[in-house]
Length: 188
Image (tube, rainbow, N blue to C red; front, side):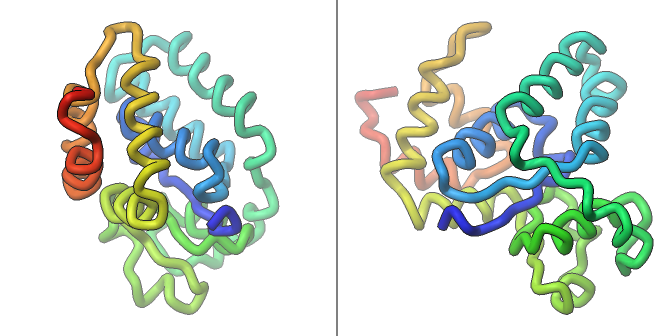
């Protein structure tokens, strides 16, 4: 599965718990992530202007992603952007997927990535729930451990597995249901 290339749209990198789960899954080798500076700039901008995170904290997050996933950044998508047949604001995401031969774009905005426009490029768009559910089906024990470790690592504020799952359920309810059933209730 590690050869499965994925581009994460900025919208799935903004919610902290969802971002953490997605990044932990790629760090565990369940898929290969691809980033562009444009995607992370959109994340930074939205964290500051829409979520209200300080410029410093947003910049620290982007720098941490750059540091930990430096191998995943591409630039060779830039000449393809204008030729992408979707709306202007998302062309760079599809161009990135095409350039790195990713099989999937994970996005909350599925309407912006119509199947009929992606099919010629052999790219699909999935919601984070669908994507994480697929990862769970492929590696249920590993995904359950990722979520347990994620909850255990949270310090500010600390959160239990059940609290983390409640937050993740806002973005990935089917995935949360599967993980919740996998994890023994005594470990909540």
